[in-house]
Length: 274
Image (cartoon, rainbow, N blue to C red):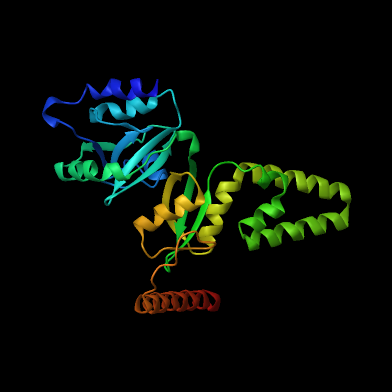
């Protein structure tokens, strides 16, 4: 039973800590799993598959490593808000006990946070640009990417890759139908293996930056969760009301972007001249 596994480590809590949660002290090396999950220093681990995690900090990674119900659904407390995230490996970071203030805040706010069955959650990743526009996508495998790559690209509005794929298909068809079939199969295999990397890379190409990795029960719930952490973030096909726009802030960001683009153009021009 999951509950037995999590309760089994709670007895290892040092007597002087009382009811304490564990928090991330440092994220470890650059390739640590905690960094891959976009976790942050001082994030507090509240629950494992809905069961409270109150244990010796030295045993948490060991618990994850031997956990039988992978992936584990971790509940994290950050900046006064909760969110869930799937973990399939030890976090590979150092831990500390949460402060008394954090523990009190978690206890007071926890009744407001509902944790559903783990099977109802999907993994999401969110990228955000300077204008707080959010590119949100699920990171579980989609068979449509391999079966019908064109429609998958259309659905995710990945226009540049779509154009390349269409041109590749057209040229292959003009040369020989057999070549078209081979190209279709090869691209399908590539989309099967690299679909998440493609979505993330295309977001970087559009000047989005990594922001959030988490788990939620639907896209609507995912947007609502992100809005709790950034009241002004915006989505395409939004399920949440539009945020209140700060025109002065928008103008400031636009000016910064224009300045950065001018500097980039000047640098490119200088290199071309040389």
